[in-house]
Length: 467
Image 1: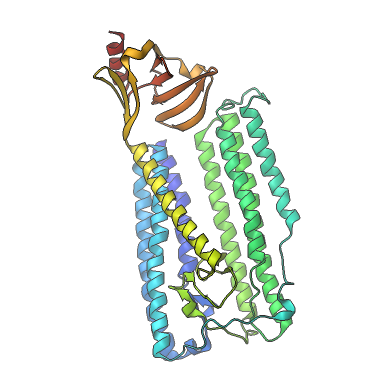
Image 2: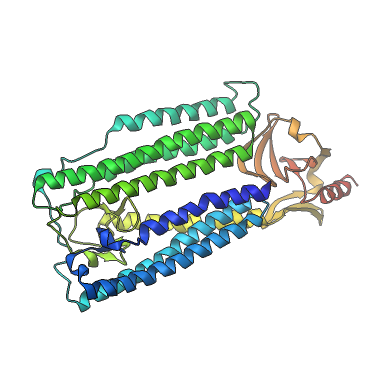
């Protein structure tokens, strides 16, 4: 079963790579308004220039295809891990590494195209922006009511899960009630829904683009783009609602990890489908207004590697991305510098947490008696219990029949450690919950439930303590 679940996780992540490849490394660059962080222009249609651009872009796309193939092969190889949490962590790290590496060919391609521009003397007055005063702040597509409806569902799901875990609502058959797993899961979905609201608002308030001297054309163009973005954000919210309902029912009613992963896979597939629909609609908009574009701005040099916007002459904090979808910050803006530093720290912190989680999942737990102390060790000595302070010790083989609730710590297949509550008694866990056997140690400070990596290790420690 573990192999097939791991393989399913790989199947979920592979479409992510294909979407990234399609968005960032397009085949039909001639039809794009922006390609590889460079604004398209009429001079690129010249036969000799077009050939050079095709060579540069073709080289970048070839490297991206190799990276995508490696990403897919590594993902399939990860399916051999039968430990589900470890497999999920490694799959996530694989996606993270793939995204970071995919920026490299993009940055080199952007640099080479800028070099070609200078050779062709195509650099103009960089950084100049145009504003259509008639439509400066009048074209919007954001409407709060459609966003509030899915938020009501998400809030209701969170409240229901919380009241079920607190035993305010008791329903027969809800096997996971009291573990707060459903509350944590629904809380994550509620957070996603809440964060989408300001994101949609900010995207709608970004500066209107000026593509024509005709204000009506500018208004229609920006309205179409913002409606398209609004539709994507709203679709993500409804996909989140559906995923939350499915996962909560799977957890509370069926207590089935496989069903949870299936709904997670469907959720990711729905998000990928929504992004694909968004890309198709955006391409249609660009093609529709391509012939009506009469105003162009050469601000390529204000984009570092086509990824980071740095323009001191632009007071705008948020601008439209040139790689991917959505908006990014102006790194020359004082607030943009703070946000950029925060995001960099958050990215590094997330990566370190993922590495630590993977190490913890891959490292077996050990419990042993040494120099009159019971030592619980994994990566470090988690707990050190003085034997002289032990009041009582017993073997427990019916922990699954007790009411166990995690209050702080780690709970995953093969590992449970931290603070738990067992039948209203506060205690500390350091054990493998997959086994039916553990040792209950009552000391002067805490009650501990511990076990080794194997039953034999647990029984050997128990015999030593009894003696």
